[in-house]
Image 1 (tube, rainbow, N blue to C red):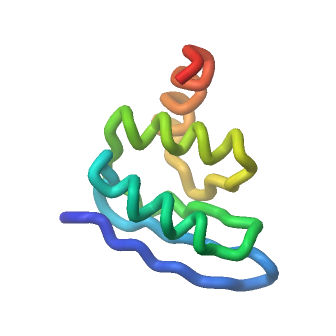
Image 2: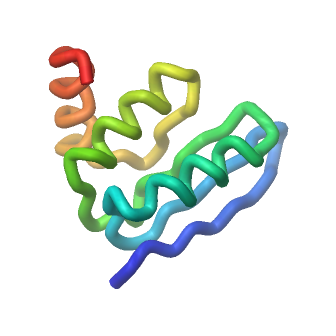
Image 3: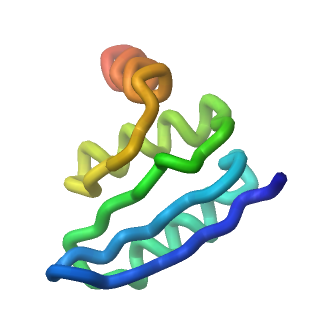
Length: 88
């Protein structure tokens, strides 16, 4: 399964829902989706099956910039915390 991106606006927040596997090759598109959205922005990760290290670092950078991460699995959330501690 590849990545599917659904975008919605509700209650003054833009939600970008990611479905499937998120890889480094998707980051340009995902970054464009975030930049072209009305803030605040949330990334809904509840249906994400797999990520790579570049995506984890990207998600950490998004979180540091104020993008809300929802539905993130504990494993991915922990991996993001590790990468943020390492300074990536």
